[in-house]
Amino acid sequence: MSRSKDETDMNDRARLEYVTDSTPPQAQTFLLLGCPYMAETDPENPDIHQRFLQSILRRQGEPDRWLAMFMLGDQVFGFAHFKIDKDERPGSGYILEFYVVPERRRRGLGQECLSLITNILTVAGCKTVWLASHSTAEAFWRACGFRETEELERSQKVMIKALPEIVAEDPSIVYAVVGVTHPNVKLADGEEYRLSLQRLVAELGMEKHVVFYNHFV
Image (cartoon, rainbow, N blue to C red; front, side, top):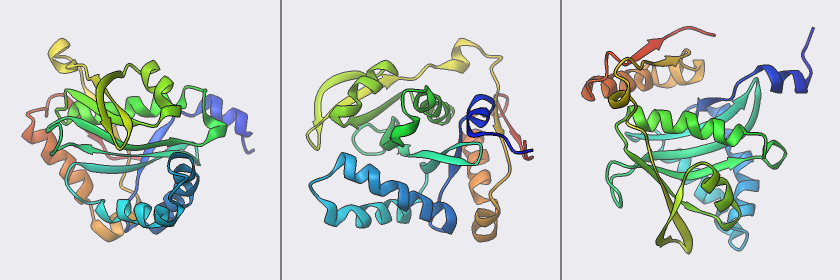
């Protein structure tokens, strides 16, 4: 017996599903979702929207850069593009794009996905995360604990948030990386993404605080 949409919302937790240009279904979904995102954030330059979205896909696979779909059950409701900054604020997390479809807003799902993102950045060693906020999203970011700086990036306010040094505060903390590699990703790239995460954990000396559970859940 299938569940209704409301039952799915009540019982499922938001999760991230990673996208590369070698995962065609997910990449196509990202391009479709990217159209309303670009229309909302950059309505004056429609000619560049598809080129910009394609450029995001092409850069996936670079070290310390992620493109993730927001999933609730089998429903996609947004995406985020984020990385570890190596230029303006070296070592900080940098959220380049963040989008939740309008019908899923004001339900706590954006904050839930942001928490998943900041967990990744915290494990990677980031102590802060920053972004350039569109004016319509500033209230959301403030509610998530970001504060305004006096800087502008592409005429948008730069906002920043300190990430908790969780392991320093509680040495018993353990993160679980749960799930198996998507079949399309595994076919194209094998287990390289999972192995890169394991290498990063080893480089940071976090082996006692991160476990990999390679099973469907």
